[in-house]
Image (cartoon, rainbow, N blue to C red; front, side, top):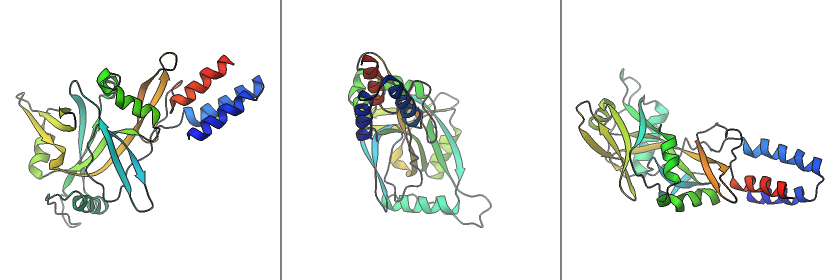
Length: 258
């Protein structure tokens, strides 16, 4: 991608004004407004992944591997939405493969004949604006810089995970659920019940079955400075004036200097 951006910039410098504007428009439609996210669902033998972690995926012919490179330092809880999903034949096979990969002792029995199928959880971050604010805090400058310079990197914003029946019930019965951080490298679910009691549940207590990696959209915030304005899910498009790479913003800025 960087090669094509660089090549486009060289071509722009050699064109007349009309041709430059035409190419910039076509380039913006192609790269500036497309979704920033690649769908990361349907992984094979997934290893344990935590929601909120930052990293990138190595894709091979036989499997995809998520490489976590860091964690966003949270100054406060981030609101989550949790929904219960019934197992199907396919998702149960995914669970069995993930369980073996993560060396978990979690036991879930699934049969087509069962009237009431076992369930797993889909967890997603809903307070996206607060998470983006965190990314611009001084404590997260290295994470933001990594996202800025590596177009393949993103943030895990959604997770499919299975827990024991006991933990599942506790999570689903909670009045509110948040993502919190107990150390620089450990996230957990924070449950708040009707009486105000707080409980922590660690992701390592479950089996991660799948995840979605969202990538940032960028806008200029000054000369050679860029800010994240969106973290998008699969199939979404950057809003008007936002782009998948700060490099494209720089091309536009440099063009108007010519």
